[in-house]
Image (cartoon, rainbow, N blue to C red; front, side):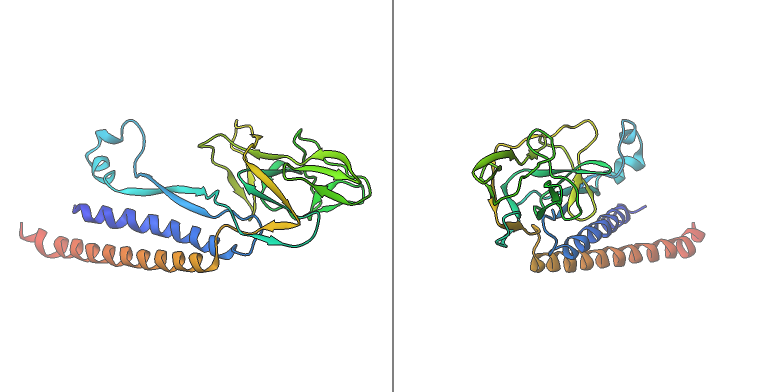
Amino acid sequence: MDSGYYAAMTGLIARTQALDAAAANLANTQTPGYRAEREFFRSVLLGPDAADSQLGETVNQYGLLGGDNLSLAQGALQKTGNPLDLAIVGQGFFQIQTQNGPRFTRDGGFVRSRQGLLVTRAGEPVLSSTGQPIATPPGEIEVGADGSISVAGGLVATVGVFEFPKGASLKAEGTNRYVAPAGVKPQLANSYAIQQGSIEGANEDIVQGTMDLIMMQRQAEMMQKALTVFHTDFNKFATEDLPRV
């Protein structure tokens, strides 16, 4: 079988999956703290026995989309003037406590609960650098660049900003919160600054997202047409050429 068929097949699979990621990125360009997803490639067949197969060796000459990785690029900061809105400049994530366990987010749109806790708009506690809920007494809140929270001049806690070892792949849960990989523990970030009164937007803008989506659509259409051509040629070979042999 012509190896071009494999090239077209793997290309169509990769572009179809990349199209889904591009559509999600474009749909969330207005979501605070959203991290765009970028595709990465791997061989079609994996495992120690893949190279022993002639079919596997042929197919593995072409890449297949292995999945999506989060882009950790900085998103644009939007000033709100709300003292409880916090934006991370640099690397790291806020840690919040949910019903399903700790989650991580770049969305720093926080509020003060009736009990005085610093929480998300969904009412989930924001955790300190020691992994504890942050209780804030009445008074004006000031947040330093290092995340230290002061009320009426007194230090209350330090909002936690966490990062993960290089190569750790966070799993998206919803639009702007993420789950740590199994067995991977977050560590305190050391290269960041907190900007009070601002929210970080998505790190994907509408223009780039639209261009990516159009490009993926066109590439998927090209691969589909290529497969149609190969399929037609195979049918012709099977119905016209093989009977003559």
